[in-house]
Length: 279
Image (cartoon, rainbow, N blue to C red):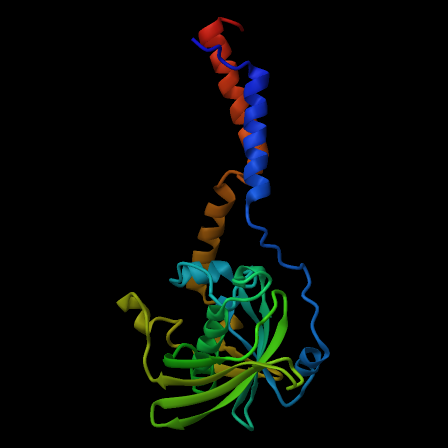
């Protein structure tokens, strides 16, 4: 019968396994501060534009309380795939412009973005240009996205998406371009179609709740959903209850390595006591 490993050997095995897991996991780092090109800074300071704000893009607890079950695909502030940093609306020309970051989770060919990240961006753009030009967030849906890929996008690039729309009844036809901000390099083009006047949800009770009944309001240089400015009493109570649950959850953010090392030491000690009779 082969000898059982000693506690020291067991601990070494556990540590080695933990380090292997740690160092072979995919690297998905996002810069703490994403450097913005000059054209993006100029968009932020353009008095003719309205920056779009929706509370569910930046408030995870609000999302949970209001029926969302995950993170927004293109507006997750902690995400590391395609991320729309800001949308800007020009009410005089019906033009929408976005500042877009392509993180490392977009990767396909080495150092380059998957074509699906282009398409996800353009799907979001096609839907939101219909919402933003209308009276209410989420009052419609994208039904057709035709994207022509023109040029590879490098991981960590910041690009500009801009386009406009024409309406025919409930149909909203959208054309857009993803470029380098100067118009000298085009990465893809969109011809899309959205429809307005419908609410999509997985639960019937969401079709006429306070989220569904929000409207846009303009506050200086910002166009935001009306629910972004204040919370009603019901929501305040829900938020307080949710926070109390969060605070009651034990702290669990111990690293993988430390957790496995402790577990290994406990197992090795148990083997010593049970098999070898050592205390």
